[in-house]
Each structure stands twice: as C-alpha cells, then as structure tokens.
Figure: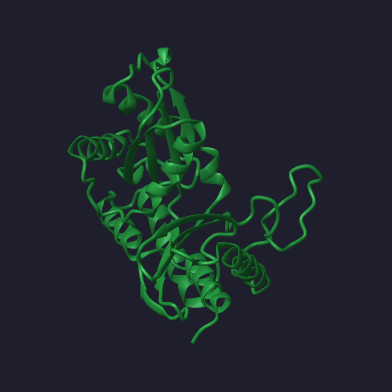
Length: 292
C-alpha cells in the first residue's frame, strides 16, 4: 500500500521531467518533416536533446515548471479536503527535491516563500464519478505559454469575425499569429467556444488533457481542429518563430452553451514542453495504470 503523498510526489516528478509519448512522437515527426539544414530543424534537434537529457537525469524539462494544475476524478464519498491538503504537502516536498522550481509568488508583496503553496497554488479541480478508482491528471503550465493565451468576444470587427465557426476560425488563427513563436513553440492549442469568460478559459485548458492523436467526436469541431492545424503550419512561423513547417503540434476544441448576449472564444496555448501526466489509483493508492 502506498501513501497518497508518495504517489503524488512521483506524479509531479514524472510530469516535470518527461513529455508524454504522444507529444514526443509529434515532435519527432515534426523534426523529420522540417527541411534539412534549417534553423527550424536545429531548434527541434535542441528540443529533442533537451527531452532526452531531462528524462535521463530526472531533472525538470524546463526552468519554468509553471502553474501546478490537478484534475481529479474521484469516487463518491472521497474526502476532497484531505486530498487537497495532501496534494499541497506533496507539492512542497516535490519543490524541496527540485522537481518544481520555487515558482509561486505573492501577487501583493512579491514575496516567494519557496514552497509553491499559497492562495491559488496549486490549483485542484474535482469531479465525482461512479467508479471506485481515483483518476488524477496533472498539468504543469509555464508562464511563457500562458502569456500568449487569448480570449475573443464575437463579433470581432477588426477581423470581420462573426458569431459562427468561420468567425471562430479567424480569431483562433489570429491568436497563433499574435503569438509569433512566443510561448516556446511549436505549441498546442486548447480552445473553448462559448461559456462565460471564466468557464471558457477553464474548459480550454481541459482540452490539453486530450492526447494529440485523438479525434474530436463532433464532426464539425473535428474539421475545425484539422483545418486550423493545417493552416497554422502553413503560416511559416515555425519552431520558436524561426520559420519552418511546424508552428503547432495539435489543436483541441470544445464547445459550451452560452447566453445570447455573449459569444466568447477562449484560447489556451501550451508550449512544446507539454508537461501532462496522470494515473489511475485504487482505493489503497496503488497505481493501476499511467494515462499518458
């Protein structure tokens, strides 16, 4: 029997030092697709070397280990307060071990107590389900990619973007253009169409829990995902904005109901250092399977 703290520290370590297999395959495919001898190819080779070194040395993939976002599907009756307290202890321990950078700053005083625990840090999202298993997913989202996220309110006159999927397409591609290689591209977009300002952004980040090689069950959203991915990679922005064929590794889109007065399109950008991992636990906190 494992302790919950023990397995959460291991989850944080693995998330911090390894990119998931689906992301690594996409990066290698992108490397093979770039023209030989270009800056784009060199940038992706450096990224590949960075991935190999981080995994071999069990050290963070990026110096910015980012915001700590837990997504927990839990059985009915699980004590969520106890889980959250344990997660905070695990975050403190992972920080002391060097798996997380001392990265959480008081927004009023500017002070950093070095624990990564404070108001809003870490973030935990709980969802009850009927299974007896506990499903925990973790995303470490760096500040650089968070800075190039965007939210649009349609209609958006500057782009002549109306309240339809064509208008959504225009603003999502505009978000890619505005990033222009910032946010440590090639990146992945998580997008939510609809909702309010808060739920739209939250749902857009949840799209980053999907594997890059999955397909959207909604045919219209699937078409939009594939179209934006293809079009973005024809813009010539490329890895880190150096030019090339690989601006995005993936696009994941969902839709929420909205009120008639509002039509938001929320875009969350994830960098190539796509730190996302998760596992399924039994009632004794033994790991039944890794998710990515």
